[in-house]
Image (cartoon, rainbow, N blue to C red; front, side, top):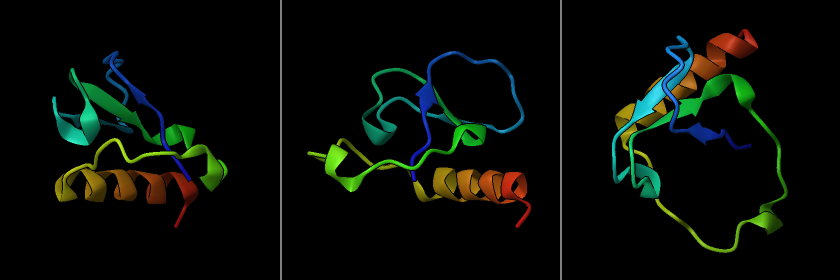
Amino acid sequence: MVLPISTSDRRIATHVKMAVGEAGQTEEGFVKCEELRSVSIERFATRVGAVRAETFTTVMRNVSVLLGL
C-alpha cells in the first residue's frame, strides 16, 4: 500500500505535511492520505527515503479514520 505525495498545499485536513529531506523530498510535500493505493512490490527497485515517526503516526491516524477503523 502506498500514498502519493504532492508539493501543492490544498489545505485538505487529511493531507500530512512533510519537511524537506524527509523521504527524500527536495521540497516541502504533503502526503495525500485519502488516495491509498495497492501496488506490486516489484515496482520498488530502491529505497528513496523514510518519513519521521511523527509523520508516520499522523498519516496512519488519518488513514485509519478514512477507512473507519
